Image (cartoon, rainbow, N blue to C red; front, side, top):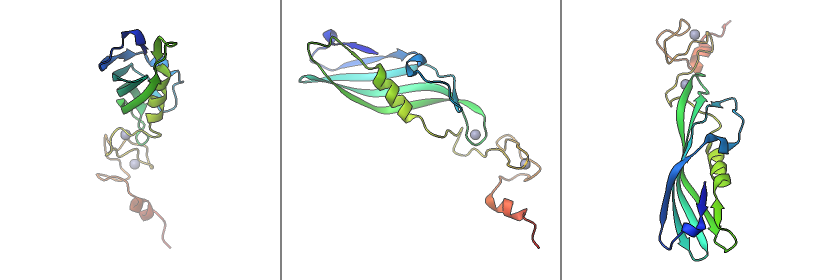
Length: 154
Ligand SMILES: [Zn+2]
Ligand SMILES: [Zn+2]
């Protein structure tokens, strides 16, 4: 995303739009595939010789749940994008692309779960416990105690 400094006036200005996922320039990793477009909603504010840019970034992505391994569509949101750029006569445009990429990659969680209540896969039989109970533990989710129950006691 590029801001033409010639367009800037003294008052605040709002920029909204989309960038293609290709600006992220990353390989699809193990847990993320299918990046959608990146939406920005930014406001610029002139502070003397600096331009303050702040706002929100949203990136759609398809990622794999760390517990149940299902793929789901998610939105990654960066609520606090803030950057300051110096306005000199030398720069006629300011390119925000690198900074947008940086903030989105930093916001990427190490682990994604499809929901906080995801019950994951049964360690015994591999059934997705969100979808159905399995024979190992009919009607209840696995717990650490359940594993202990299976220990052969002498
Ligand atoms: Zn899940
Ligand atoms: Zn099972």
